[in-house]
Length: 628
Image (cartoon, helix red, strand yellow):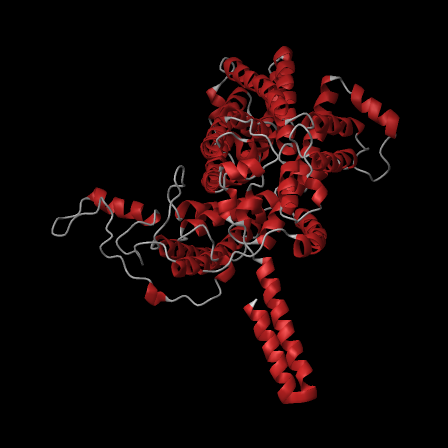
């Protein structure tokens, strides 16, 4: 308001003094004012106080709080265990890592756990939400980035739903000896010349049936997911019990035939099998105790999924030589190779249940993301309509139809190519959000104001803020004391902190350091990918990698010198080290995606920008958080 008054006064005074020359000055002031308002609009923040799990916020929600911790764990396991166990493991073992696929899964599980722990902390900070990474970025980095994240999450869940429907169609066709494929061919005719596959009527019907299930309330939907997970866990247990009688350790005589590089490359592929745990973070408004249940469910489900992948990969590679595995469905077909057709049929039933559960995990958060965005005015208001069962009905219908059409027209290979970039981008932002919020003096983020100059004079060194386990003056430091210093350094608690408490100036400086570190990480990951693709000039690349790695480490050490404000309840250990490693891994995996995926991302984002400028700039319901 003051800015508008000042602009008016400038225009009036210029009109008196300059006569006819006043128009250019007024126009320039108006243009500056418009630019300032646009910048504030793009980076305006959502208030964290409105997202706490309070009675007032619960009363405002139209969704029903019916989910407990066990329900969330079941959702997390069901959304992950599927293609990773039955399909990806055979492919990675045969062509990439050999029996070392077991280590690949452990490495990928550790990487997923890094992002999962950041999701868990943000679930404690922002419990009352259905938007997951979309809302986390809204309260930290602003509206425009939040829209980009939410828009890509919608596409990723649509693609995940369609891909699972296609996989289910293929699995059912195998179980019926090709009868379903004959029905589809009779209805749609054989594929045209040059076409990859015919439209899949069965996949369309499967998607529509799953969509109808979601109309009848979240509790009934989750009960159906429990049944699927029981079948899947039963199949997993049977694989372990029966497989122990078929193992031959001679199949591990050459454990890493493709070397350590093959194991690491396999880990990058196996990481995609862990995508889906973030579904848990979309249930904040439907969970009875989100601050306790969501962090526990994320960590437990990731641990169980890692054990499932590692144990099944071990049985598979110990029972059959890795060179003889099937690329398409190794864990299913090894039983046929060992003349155990009954076991092959039983495992196929388990795979069928796992694919349905994975499809459930992809479709469940889809309308909830759209519901959260529509509530903020970033999508059409129809998407926030809730039916009598407490379900976003309109969003479920429209996005379910969209997913059904994708499953009908696009073959599985195309759908697989169009995956993961949005999810990895969301994981990257979640790690960055933890870093930003951990160093802020209040619930407000300084991102929209980080371009202001930071007054370092206000940051008083905290020389008297020694860690509890530091050695006292005059006493020799033990070996444990030296390791304790390194531990305190990555936890932001050391004797060289710039201040005793979090300050607004420190928060702004942390934002600048973080942006600089992300640029260095992008350069590091680019050099890594380049060195894997091209063999020329590796010595120069190695030197550059070493230099950039040192710069990244210096950034992490710099961030560790700032005091932190930890939330009550679960919080990530090893900040800023753990989120920084998560950012590095996620950006690296994004750069390994195919050019087709990046082209898809560009086209989808162009369409998304049109949607944002229609609804976001004109209809967004949140005002700027006033600066103190």
